[in-house]
Structure formats: structure tokens, C-alpha cells
Image (tube, rainbow, N blue to C red):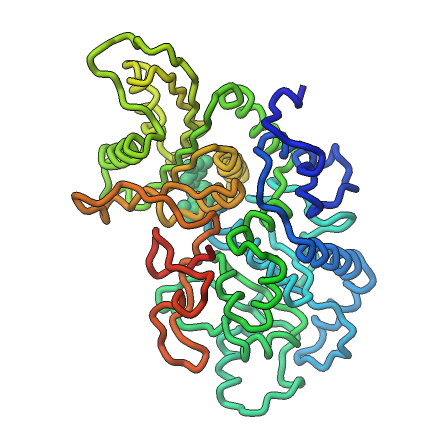
Length: 475
Ligand code: GDP
């Protein structure tokens, strides 16, 4: 019986306090109706304004989404015309195009959805086989999948944002006829790292009238959106609590498919449900060649024991004399099996000083990041989601995998420092400022082209990320 896993929840939580519509068919997406049973009641409530914006967006998606007359008409126009002399009644689109791992994909999709809402564009996604079947459809009676027969699966024939900016610089008065009908925007970190001025009003003024944008991105660029004057006003109204943007958008968009939900709930009920406390531990090793497993294990233990997340071992006795035998469960997510194995053995071989029993469970150990592998991504999604159900979360710095878990859980994680950055007397981990993902490659210039080292000082809700000092995050 599903009710047996209820933490504390009620009917209102079921639909995220009105953010989700209730008309979906339950059998097609069970998590949509049951996920609230696995979470504590949240004190983060969506604002009425956010709910109204999302209802308007849904209406737009229903009218302009795939398989509608408006879609066919608008796409035919976009496809057949090189420049934009549309009559203004067309639908506008943003096609999200994936790059990098699943964490990067999820956080960048959430950012792109917010951009779609702010610009009255319909969000379509290019899901390859690797991530198809992970999520339910988010929009009622419609689809967010770019249709298979769309010419916009490719972008080689489409003008790029870089050349578009270049042309813009050489011309003073741009007219609407100068604008292409489709534009490919590359919004991800590259080694050259040119400034893209996406965070500027003048760029947004130009992009506004282009009917189709293809955005290839792996970044949570919401902090950039909050730098744009008109968007900032809207974001403030939609999210009076700035540190809940991913939390709300994530719960709106990313419902585990029935296949993923089966994996999540079976694992949860088998290993986690009975514990008095659930601790999520995500160990992402970015440089396995230079970091030893011992260094990482030492970091994890020093972080968890110092911050009283896990108890010390009683090395003197082989039996515990404490009466407290409560069970804590640690969910370990890592590509490597050794972390779960070591921690499990530690707490089975010796009692803890507190007498608490520590169960350690690691769902998978894929050894390496794999691409174009659906089951691999399914495991990653399952683990991000399970981590998000933790009471306490420990994540690895700079990992977007961890960001998804903290964001969906509304949790401020303990961030393990990157092992090579640890100084002898510095802490092994620090608690994060908010549950928002960090925007790693934040802008470096003001809109007039003047370099700006850090934008945090100019915007009250933006701070430098603790885990990556080039990054910015909302707090
Ligand atoms: P990031 O690289 O840490 O920012 O996170 P991403 O999710 O973008 O990319 C890492 C990818 O490696 C994941 O999507 C998974 O495919 C894989 N991966 C990394 N860590 C884990 C883990 O703990 N569990 C599983 N199942 N996969 C992982």
C-alpha cells in the first residue's frame, strides 16, 4: 500500500500546491500522483503569479505545440523563409538541444523552460534515444518532443548566434527584415569562452523577434536571465523566494516515467523507507587519475563525522552499550563501487559510539560515464531522484548531478571540496548557500563590453558559488 511510505503529506502537496494540473491520466505517469508521498511537506509554495504564468504557458503549448494547425503553419513559414518578415501572429519556439551528462541536461532544460515562459516561446526538446523514456510528458494533451520529421534536428543550415552578433556589430540600425527566421545559439562553456552577451537587454531585444531559436546548452543560465531588466521584474514576481526557482520548475517538468518510478520506489521501499534518517552521499570524481580513493574516503569521513551527519566508530568495543539502535540509511551514488563497499564494511565491522546502526546502499557503479546508453541514463536519473529524497545531502563540488538532487529536494547540501583544493587545515565540506544549481560559466562582461570580474556585487540575490568561484548562484 502506497500510503505506508507516506512521510507527512496531504492532497494539496499532491499537485505541488496548484502548480501541477490534476487532469493527467494517472496510469500514464504514476510519479506525478505519488511523488508527494515520498517527500516531507515543503514550506516552499509556488506563488499565484508563477501558477498563472504556467497556466498561460500550457495554453500556448496546447495551441502552438506539435500536431496543431498553428504549429504546421508557423514551422512551414520558418522553414521556407530565410529572413523574418512574419506577420507577428505566428507561434515562436525554442528548441533545447542536449550536450554533456544528464545533470547538465536537466538543469539546462529547466533554465530553457524559464526562458520560454519569459519570452512566450514554446519549448521543444531534442531527446535522443539515450534519454527518451526517462521522463513523463510535462504538458497536458500535448508533447514537448520535437517531431521526428522536423528539419530542426539539424542546425548546419541555420545561422549561428556568433555570426548574427558579428553582423549586428557592423550595422547600426537593424530592421526586422535583417533577422533570420531561425538561429542556432550555443550556450555552453568552450575553451575560448567568448562573451555571448546573452545577459544583456540589447541582445534580448534582437532575439525577441526571431521565431525559432535552437539552444544548445548545458548550463543553468537562470542568473543571466535575472540580469535582464524586463525578465528580472517577471522573475521577482514569479519567485518571491529566489532560491526556489529550480525546485518549482524541476517539480513541474521532471516526472520520472513509470519505468524510472518503478526503480526509484522499489529501491526506496526496500532500503530507505524504514530508516529514521536518510543521508544522500554523492561522490563524483572528476580526476580519477590524480585523486586516490583514500583521499576521497578521508574527505567523506571527515565531513560527515565532524558535522555529526554520521557517528564515529567505537574502536574499543565490539558491542555497543548504547540503547539507541536507530537505523540511519546512507544512499551512496558513485560510478565506483568501492565507496559504498568501504562505508558499509566500516559500520558493519565496528559499532558506532552512538549505537546507531548505519545501513549503506549503493544502487549502481557504472565505472565510467557512458554516452548514448539509455539504461545508464536511467540509473543516473534514479539516483539523482533518490538522493533528492534525503534528509541530509552531501554532494561533490562542481557536479551538476548533485545540483539536480539538491534542487529537487530543496536541500542545502554539504559540498565536499575538490580533493586537490583542500588545504591542510581547511574544512572537508561546507554547507551550500541555497538549493539552486550554480551557473558555472557566468558572464564576465557588462553589456557595454567592460570587463566585470563578478556580478554578485551588482545583484542582491546572486552570490559567488562556494564550489566554483567563477560561478554565480541565486540565494
Ligand atoms: P556532472 O558531470 O557531475 O556535472 O554530472 P552529469 O550528470 O552532467 O554527467 C555525469 C554523468 O556521469 C551522469 O549523467 C551519469 O551518466 C554518470 N555518472 C556520474 N556519477 C554517477 C553516479 O553516481 N551514478 C550514476 N548512475 N551515474 C553517474
